[in-house]
Image 1 (spheres, each protein chain N blue to C red):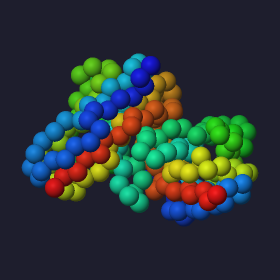
Image 2 (tube, rainbow over the protein chains, first blue to last red):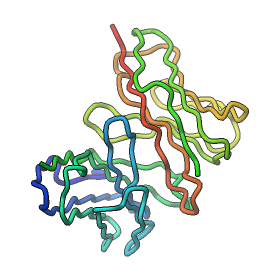
Image 3 (cartoon, rainbow over the protein chains, first blue to last red):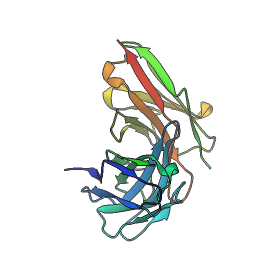
Length: 116
Length: 114
């Protein structure tokens, strides 16, 4: 059981470039999340999904897009990267059995992104 | 909207000393309260969770937390710190929305001195 995996682990982008971060989970979880972590800010929710084919905005969605074409994968896209998007990005998943986001979330190891 | 406040961005204790990490939430009583731990260069993992019933919750690695409704607090404690406890700790509560997503506190980094 790999749990939640994220690729890539590190990436450096120039301003204006685009990229996609991939999250995969092998636990058959319904819910998946993308967070960003910045020093002194805790974790902030970017987008989330409550099932295959669904996505919704979180607290800080601007500049990001997501897709959940397969239940096990959740992609986060940056169409035109900006220095303000320099951050560590975490993907998480949960069973969703409660019908809410209250079940234990399982986190990936993170992707460290630098935008110059 | 819900909010969660962690007092102290950095706490330092000696090995063997009591660990106390503070978390207060907004007055709307949430059905669930969480503590997550993040070890260096890793993702977060669940330490413990309060749902309903007993207000003293035991988690992994000897940590526990007590839900105090009258004080709107959910402080995390451990009687005796180990070097391996050095990590960042996050308190989280549901955001009050229909989906029940979590909002996380800003984190408290725990250092343990030998």
